[in-house]
Length: 77
Length: 260
Image (tube, rainbow over all chains, first blue to last red; front, side, top):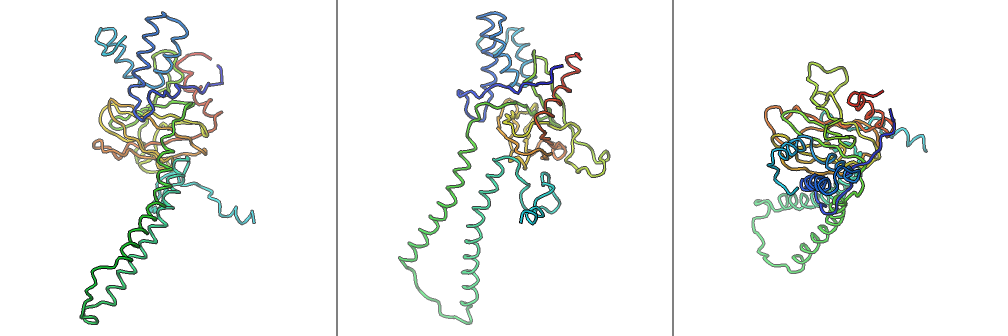
């Protein structure tokens, strides 16, 4: 088991400089799925996936995944 | 000389509330140290003004007693003194405002590259912590609930109403980003030693950046009324060396991956 845990996380995004990071999380999620739609399952999109997973609570991600499956996701995909 | 200084070094830092405590807990982050320093700056002027005002007040009451001094003076103007008692307070305010604004704006400095993101999610009546930097899928690999240890289950030496079963383990001397939110009602994630108090609002992600400067265990309590057990959902942050943090994360992740 690799003992070196890499200490890396979503960097600060200057589009969201304030305390409220709700839109940052939402935007990262949308960017990931936009990247998937544009490029398919590639390693570049994995970077965006890491960002939204770091920022967004698990419950929110599950809810959005369900909404995407139902077609009720309230955002541009 | 060094030996003498050593005798006065704090051997055990105050990182939790003490009975009959009057002052702040010991600072463990630059932010808290800044707050304490600002408090000292302001307190100096506060004492000056307090002594001055009390002196004038007591003196007036003592010397101008109605029986000792029955005839009051009828002075209504005094341009010089009026100018003085406008200018001096402005100068004092300037001395207070400068360190205050310096601290306020330094709090807003964006840390470009935090090393870790930890999510603190408030529930009624416990905290959930998610360390999602190590997820390889949408499945949460490192998440746990943090409940207060009831009084009946405390061991000798543990702190009442402050201990929890699972602490928030963080690496010391590392930039952390903490995202605070709530799954139901308003809560607030507060740890005095770290100079942190951040409201947990459902539907909102509040970000705070901290840098814990020394290893140790830091205690805090929920700071926004959230129901009947609001007083019983404390927060405990344990800052360890980076190496120990790495081992802790690996140990937490092993059962999920199922690999040796």
